[in-house]
Image (cartoon, rainbow, N blue to C red):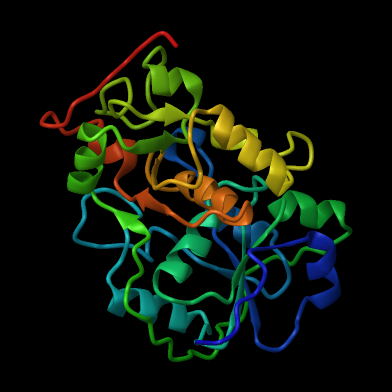
Length: 285
């Protein structure tokens, strides 16, 4: 395994280092259907020069009916290798909202043992603010590389493990909005029930970002907000959200604040909320 790199890099750093050999920038933007936006089309209209579009709907398990679920090692290796990413590559992931889906890329690479992965803090919003140029059209197809994934790390939780954690009163932290968590507003995933996993706590993922810059808060502030949500970050915690995207922001926040005893529930509410055999709790809190 090659040496690790910082989990986040600033837009100013990337402006100074764009085009560095051995680094690959990927746009991992995801827009949910209810936004009416097309991430691939937006990439073609303007992206960080030299970036490649990492489609999280392709880097996913094709046998799972839910979107963007963790792919097997062979598919993951094939898809990222086709983007010109090898085991020595420094991957820098960003998205257009600032931070929404890029942390999923950070989690996926680390899940398969690749620590040379960073998130662009503030995403395309910060890149533009730092004076970064944009490139339109499709980037030239990169030369494919061989990526050899390591054995999957214990960073993934599936529903039976989450159910066991819920039944045992273990820590579960949900990244959705307060209204979706409490069940007072309709969830964004059609067909799911309203509410949350019994016993879970709530910390909206956006509360880990500066509202103007869309950059992550300082690590001490992130830890303070995690603790204020009723979570002890030094104890094991399962992270969940709507579909496994923003739970990875909570994972990144825990990592940055020095805490590593966590796993991401890949199915999240898109799975749990529509399975009638799994319990749901709701409240006005």
